[in-house]
Length: 219
Image 1 (cartoon, rainbow, N blue to C red):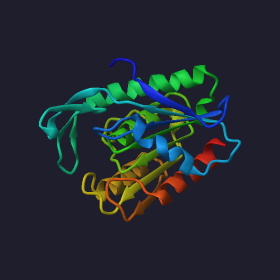
Image 2: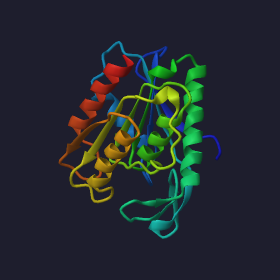
Image 3: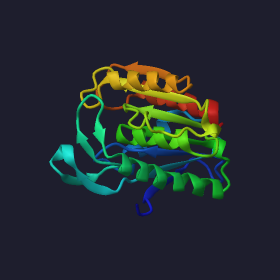
């Protein structure tokens, strides 16, 4: 996969922490840009937010239409039939963005991987397998697509994980969020799980809770 294009936003010069936030199917890095001011971070917090754009590819469930996607979804059954090779390639590509932040002077433990929907599936894979300790994983309205194959790194056993889901989500049923929690527990993790009365989206209360997670684990 070619190098990812992305949007970069810094809350203050000389950041000491970074959040890499992955959008969902058919969207772009611009999707979560407006969230940053709503997180309630301290005024002196120097955080670099990176919003990558997924590459364009044909998506089977959308009639083969080409659109921004982290991987192909071949069927919408309860477990989702996805192109795991493409998901892994996306994880590797986002991992290079993590590498770059470390090269720029950010401690790996001050880097959080966040993802919505498809982006969340990539966030699980990357966050759990990355060879250096990361600051945490934020999984929004998503599912754990590589639960059976992920190679959890010793560095990220015990990584903080917050999971959020809408109880009325018609795209990614809330049962898949609960299933992710169970799979993570089987792997030895202790994720936090919160639901909100919403569909396949985010809400202000959720964003504020994410802000609390970032304050606790990055600042």
